[in-house]
Length: 196
Image (cartoon, rainbow, N blue to C red; front, side, top):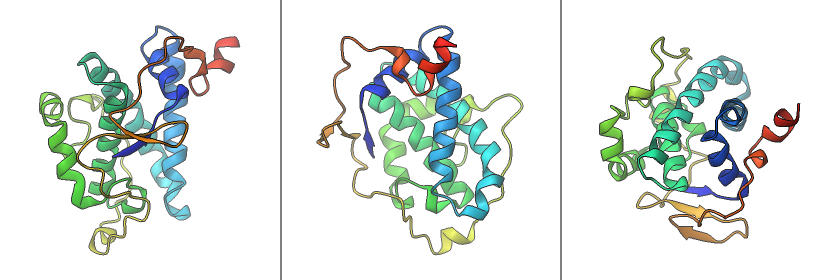
């Protein structure tokens, strides 16, 4: 998968793994991810998916931290959560929200198979052990989109590794090194809440 990596991603990592700031960062990152993916959805479908996405992305923040704790790099841990999201979108038939085409889902699963197996994550159960005990909100499926899937927002051809676009626009395999002076308040939304 091709993802971006810049100072805000490193700041988010630091914030999510810091007491107190972690809760603030979690909420802001959930809001950000819901907004980004809803903008890819058909306008008439956005509100019916909002609660599901909020609760889904909240659960994937736990996945991200668990992947970091398991020794995955920042880029890999974040990619794991994006793969989870693509599993969920695929199962719901939300092909316009997918970042990778359906034909590459299995390849992405295999790359992180040991992590996914350990946490009971499958294409059909994208949250696995990270699913909250009371579940997450349902949202209507659009299975007809799978029959004529266009994957209009997907980028194919990056299934063999994590590809990272840097701040300068260069694409590197595996990601960049964590800067020494990462300020967790540079994570999305943290600065204004930390000062409040």
